[in-house]
Image (cartoon, rainbow, N blue to C red; front, side, top):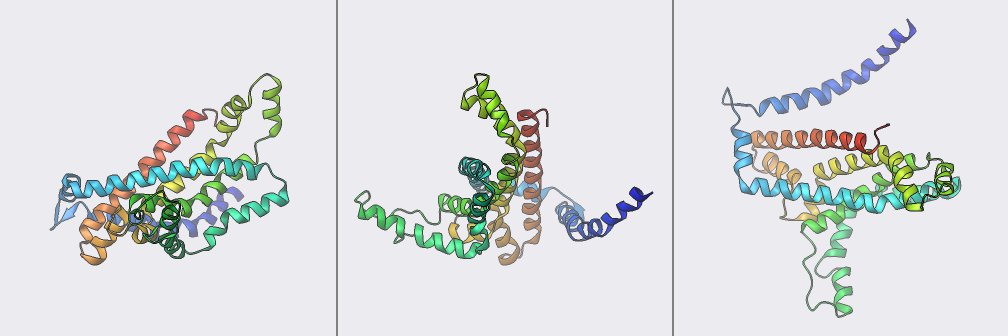
Length: 273
């Protein structure tokens, strides 16, 4: 009986999520299939047949995938190093890792504008060393957006991996090495499979965050459109809420597809769970 009544504790949170998340999403998706009082798929046909729209979607996916891959490559060794330190050093390193999250994305984006601008630190340094004769166009490009998103989401990847890696018993690695396995083999057969849950969680958060981020692409992208800034333009500037709803629905579908693919990858990399 106690367990039966314990489920009532979920009711407030369930009602809150239903009213303020599920219902708006359902209404948004439903509105994309109705135009002038009749059912239609014209919004999706218009989006998928327009090369400009498809270019924006492709740029967004490229930036999101590249940001996720770079976060994995930089975050995994960093998280592994942090996870194997003593409790005191680990606390300090984690605090340093999450410190950028305490700064507003607007401030971080403006700092990268100073660094990547035509008269920024990077161009001045390259020209000072004689490597280039004129400033490079680093700002307002997909590269600048990727750099900003990497700075934004790398701490999330590190934190997601540290929690998993610190629970891996080092005796397992020592046992594998004592049986003749090299360090790389021990990492591939023991550490990596056990780290898959954190890797999948971090990758999902980074990809979805990069896909839906607005402030950083808006400031560092300039006229380089991504899906989030394109959605904002249609909703707030052009007042085309129908097309904005279509774009939002496509973003939701992509998110669910990515989560499903991540789960399948996790099951394949670590079939024993």
